[in-house]
Image 1 (tube, rainbow, N blue to C red):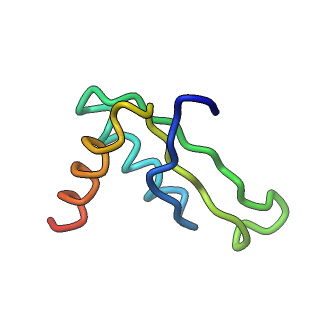
Image 2 (image 1 turned 60 degrees about the vertical axis):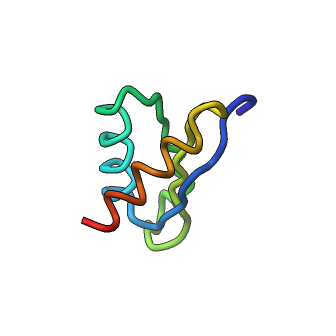
Image 3 (image 1 turned 30 degrees about the horizontal axis):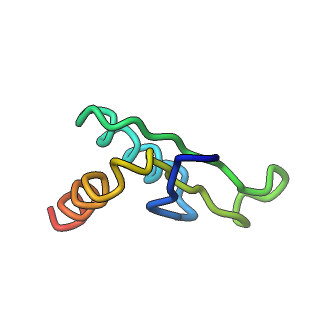
Length: 68
């Protein structure tokens, strides 16, 4: 994924999708990449990516969500 940076990784798919939704609501393009094992969802992670030029803004928004 050229021009995109991973800003968060979690094993919780719902949390990753929530963060993605928060970023999209702030007009920050975001995508999740689900790398969980399809036969056993306990294994694997979900990564959240944003465009390179929005990394700092996206990280600040995520940090503010974690502090609420």
